[in-house]
Image 1 (cartoon, rainbow over the protein chains, first blue to last red):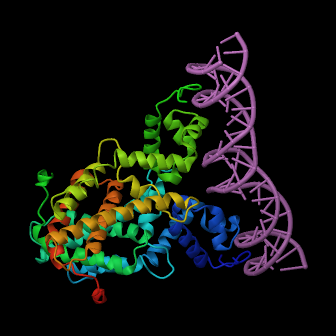
Image 2 (cartoon, each protein chain N blue to C red; image 1 turned 180 degrees about the vertical axis):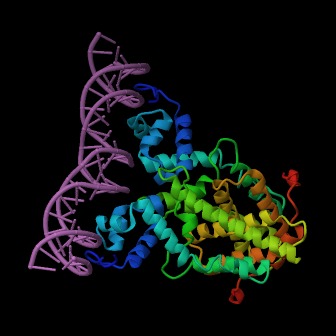
Length: 212
Length: 212
DNA sequence: TTCCTTTTGTAACGATCAATAAATAAATCC
DNA sequence: GGATTTATTTATTGATCGTTACAAAAGGAA
């Protein structure tokens, strides 16, 4: 059932990689099908036949991103020996990935569809779910570190996880604004310099009333 | 020369405020003139006569944002008694502004035009310039704190300024993802808990070679 | 009143948007 | 070889994009 009919005349993965770069650079809304098909070196019907409509094409490109350029950023969270190493490794991997060669700056998950109330909320919901999953991943790692004694028994693991991802999201914007690898590394250095004091002070939420 | 001709039949500032909310929510690209004019309660020719084209309308809306919802976030940087107070005040003001009433979540400067290579790079450049100006503002405040002895003589003020703005940019994305005021406040608590250790460790850049 | 200026509503402009119909081309299966 | 199936090319679809002619409407100035 496989080799029936005229064979496809292009490399599907390579075409998807080019589409990914366009989505990554311009965002979902900013990438027109005309530009996408041109970058893929195809005519529109070939794209629609191979990937479906624009939303499906973006989802496939997003999946490819997670397998390629986006991989390796969050992979070390579970395997890192300590929570501190997990955070430092993820942030330093981000600093590298966000300023890597000719690839678009910053993270595709953060930058390619932020306007949730768009004609295609599905796309934005997908990306949001990925971001929230990363928070959960960090939170679980911190809970394990709390069980291991690396973090205090009263540590607010959720708050720490949100803090770290907040910084990582901001790094994507800095990268888009032109920050180079040294600048992003300096940001990570700042964060890690404060880490020990941060986890020493982290407490279960409740005294937010002292907000000025 | 003022009262000549037919008087305008709408409140220009009120109409601009409604346009601002649409741009804030949908972004520059995501906001169509059809939706903008509908939200403003006007027909297209009235909008073009009063504000010019879409780019000019966005710039006017951006200026209004800086005077209203966006005001008060960065105002305290120079006047705060210490650099620590400046950072804490700015971040806490952001946490409030990003989760305020019925207003769109997050910061319009960060969220409304991130795709720099768009058909309208001018808009993105404007916002980028605003963000870089905030970094400079923080850097200068930190330099003053260094002269005052609050920061060490060898502190890397630029790196600290980029770190703080990175966190603030990330907070906009968290707000868009649904983070409430307590969550953002907890992020600020984390940052401030690490602040003293961070400024104690901040050194002039140069040993970034120990990046893993 | 009669100009003169500006705003308003209606309707439409060409361009671009995502998506597709129809016809041709190239492979396998019988 | 003939039939079938899939891919490619060309051209086009209706919808929406930002923007604007045009003429009626509403004020001050003569």
